[in-house]
Length: 80
Image 1 (cartoon, rainbow, N blue to C red):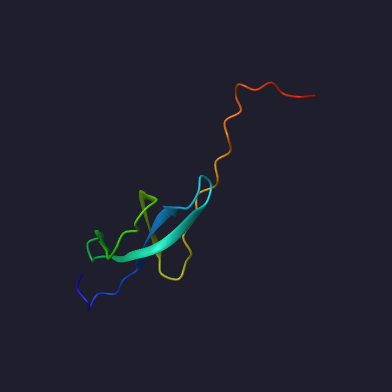
Image 2: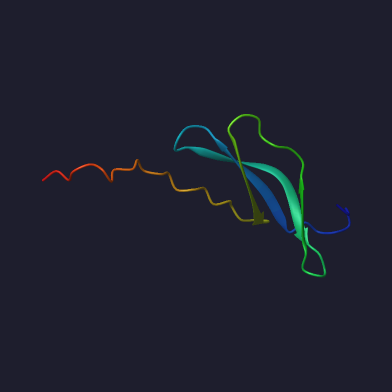
């Protein structure tokens, strides 16, 4: 990446810590060029539990974490 260009986004990866718990790790930076093309550069990747999902978030904002998934209960009868 050209060091004279301002980076507008930070890249985050999700690392799974448990079935319903994730941590966001900063792994790189990115920017839009004058023609509207996005350039992303990854400096590192987490070891273990990496989901493969990378989120580019504008500088100064926090990444969105996924909502925990509830167990599927479609086959259970409703108790009254």
